[in-house]
Amino acid sequence: MSAIDPAAAPAVVVRLLREAREAVDREMDRRLSVPAGGDAAARLVEAMRYAALAPGKRIRPALVLAACEAAGGRREDALAAAAAVEMLHSYTLVHDDLPAMDDDDLRRGRPTVHRAFDEATAILAGDGLLTAAFAAAAEASAAAVAVLAARSSEVLIGQALDLAGTRPESLAELERIHRAKTGALFAASAELGGISAGAGEESCARLAEYGMAIGTAFQYADDLDDGDFAALASEAARRRIELGHEAIRLAERLPSPGVLIELARWVSGL
Image 1 (cartoon, rainbow, N blue to C red):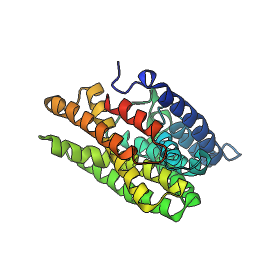
Image 2 (image 1 turned 90 degrees about the vertical axis):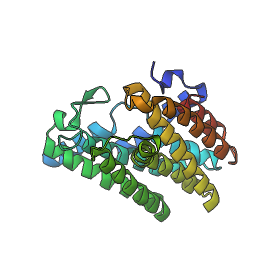
Image 3 (image 1 turned 30 degrees about the vertical axis):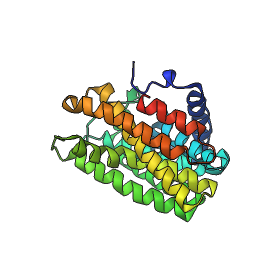
Image 4 (image 1 turned 120 degrees about the vertical axis):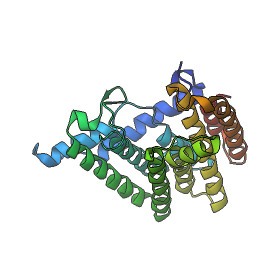
């Protein structure tokens, strides 16, 4: 069984993921409409849709919506930000799968974009999704754009560290990569939820810390599923639990933390 199997998640998390997928996929479908004509422009958007609307947990946009509610807002106020996060995440996956990076043939149970289309189209599709992500964030607020830009830079650094070829020898070295490559976008997701709710600076900062904690725990769980970094597995398992407790402490200080607490328990294996 997967360490982060949605089927084994608490009922409230299962419902959140299902509802988030439905709402955010509708939002992305609207934003990524295929132009008429069936020409190269249409094929590019089809590749963008292939990536963004592929099967997946939608945990990052779900976090945007849950954080918005936890901070006292409404889900509909966070839809643009949630779509922005998922499109940006999809862009990172498209480029991560390219031959120059990880050279993967499969993603989410089907051929990667550069295999289903071609390498040049995949590069442009990733670029297009990144552009669409910032367009959606701009509709949310200037603050949302600033958060997404800052966290995107961290994600790029994490990818650079991962590609450097130096295998982490300590948990601290591994966590530096995990916090940048995975934790940063989770942190953005939670903070964007707070921004969408109109929460104050302190609450948004707390949400960003929460997102970083569960995002890093999520990556440790992913390592466990993939059998990566086996020499550090015992330390990583303990750290995953610590991060879960840390996330719960942060969530408990929010107005309506219920779903965020259950999400933290599921991701960290508590």
